[in-house]
Length: 108
Length: 121
Image (tube, rainbow over all chains, first blue to last red; front, side, top):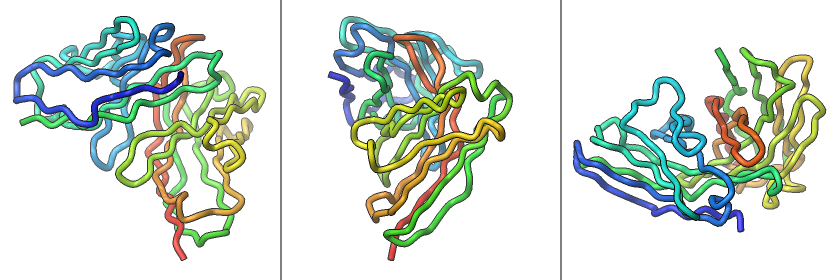
């Protein structure tokens, strides 16, 4: 299956740690990438190849993976982290990538 | 600097045709796949398809096969998304994005700003 499942919404208290998960069979053979999307803006890549960050992404954002589950962890959540987060995975044999349904992160 | 710049918002009537564009700069356009992603109002991201401008090889996600056409003009480093007959359900924000990575680990590292398409009678 090429489907990726995410929790629709997650909340975290300011300064605390939150984990956003993504489940799917494709994650057993390929890494997830993660994207942050704020209201009215285009998505931005925040994690690729399981736990690599593009330049400009703070190191309090990290990724991990185990079995069919990939995780995005934000350590010391800030108000600026409030956004929708999407995972994405696939491989060349599938001929296309798929996105998870997205998780809305609220920072309280 | 890698940039993808999309064409402006469009308002069209059902049944009309439309082509939107995505102009790339700052990298070798013919060496990377470019994807198109749909986001319907209040909804998530959906990959529509991807194109390799080097040889125009195109792959469509099953849900979009036959409903849209993806093309590219490498002489002007521009990718296109085209409809022959729009429907109200095509109302959405459309993003282009550069795909990179290898084999089993692909991702979109640079995104256009989005093109809002509104289809209404």
